[in-house]
Amino acid sequence: MSYLLLIFAILVSGCGGQMMVKKDWSVIAHRGASGVLPEHTLAAKAAAHVMNPDYIEQDVVMTQDDELVVMHDIHLDTTTNVKKVFPKRARKDGRYYVIDFTLAELKQLKVSERFHLKSDEKVYPQRFPVFQSAFQIATLSEEIELIQGMNQSRNKNIGLYVEIKAPEFHKKVGKKILKKVVDTLHSYGYKEASDNVYLQCFDFNSIKALNNMTKLKLVQLIGENSWSESSTDYDYLKTSEGVKEMSQVVDGVGPWWSQLTAGGRATNFLKLLQKKGLTIHPYTFRKDQLPKTFSSYEEWIRHFTVDLKVDGVFADFPEETIALKSRL
Ligand code: CA
Image 1 (cartoon, rainbow, N blue to C red):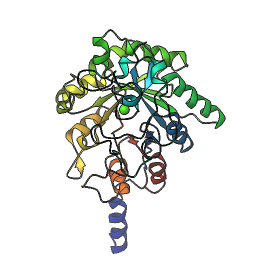
Image 2 (image 1 turned 30 degrees about the vertical axis):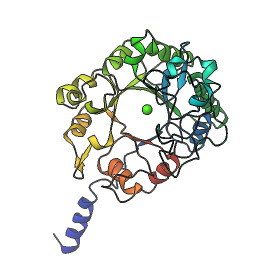
Image 3 (image 1 turned 180 degrees about the vertical axis):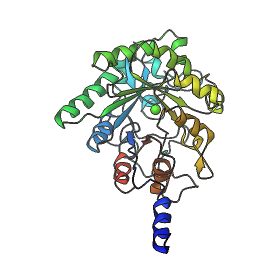
Image 4 (image 1 turned 45 degrees about the vertical axis):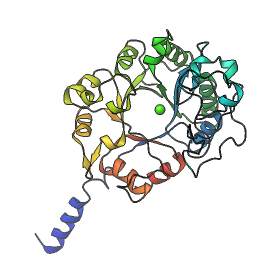
């Protein structure tokens, strides 16, 4: 082999095929464009839509009168002015729960940028000001109609990415949140696996139940057992048996990003997921909350999409994340 040819061969192998086979990946607007406007408001969803993500995320909880609203928490006191409007409606633990209020009552509340429960300090200091302007809690139907409406007016097909929050908590008081979410999605024309929607949940028993209720694509979210997010055993789901069991019911998995990388390399869990051909959408990538192990947002996103080849990312800043696609 000539000297030049050898250099050429080294260069080509050094590219590792990445240059030639550039993998496409999705951007999921996490709680809307939540880095720009208060999470889960219709304003945050409309802003996300014009950024052209692949999906816009909804977290769903149920009201006292069995309506579905788009909220991240089962509590109201870190994103609304509930304490001011309904000062006597806290439970013994001092918290205000969505499930204790009717939709008509919830519509009286102002939604704010997220703040800390005790200090009232903003969670993300550089984001939208607390209690500025006017935002309301939206129902799941209102949000679906917004996205479908904008899909029509902008000639787009941006998908939904619906998370059912705390199903065990809802079930304990007789709330049929799984059925209501499925019925709502079906009623808006999302019925088949080929439809542009994912249904996600942290609770594996609920995912298994959903598998018998709908043909829609399902995503198992993976937490850590220490978070007490649900009674699901995530340590088990991360084993080869767990991954095998999940692969029989879900299309994809939503892991915490740090479960996929260790020392700059893919973890065994990531390898198991990829071997099963599961779609992998890690959460949550925040431009203003960079992990210490990455020197820039671009480097963080590059590691996951180029090195680890995940299928998409949940991102609070969809605009900046989509802009990286053409550079990575
Ligand atoms: Ca979520």
